[in-house]
Image (tube, rainbow, N blue to C red; front, top):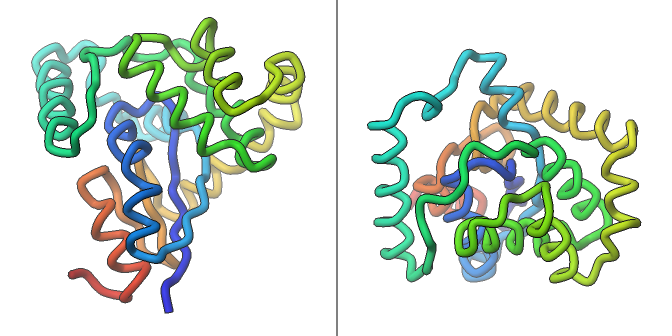
Length: 200
């Protein structure tokens, strides 16, 4: 019997685009239920003094080329490089948290990444923010008021603390029970583990 998989996703993580766009179809094929868990990966990385690409042009160039190669493999059409790093990463994830609570979060996250990686529209700010919300049929005024509330900010902090307690240190991460799988290239492994309790 398949176990549930928690998808720890943080809008702002570049490699997460690949998982965001692939996860639903792969999970359906594997028969695995997925819970999308937005969190603030930047806070975790700053706490660990882990800033992988800022002020590292050679590594950043590799990252964009690597994502481009993998996207071609998966049949994804992306326009790279995309704006990075994001100015409003935390707020974009507060919106995502509201969405996951109300049941439209996965669609919003997919739309936000699509606009970011195909049109260069940054998540968390206009016009990308309003367009992503419109895609999932949500009124921006209502959602943004909830997302800006101290309660939502505190919930994102708590989710980020929970991710750290599980051993999550980057995005995308997939958690099955006590097992943590980090990176888009571990998505299939995580689904195997959720379905079979082992790899392969």
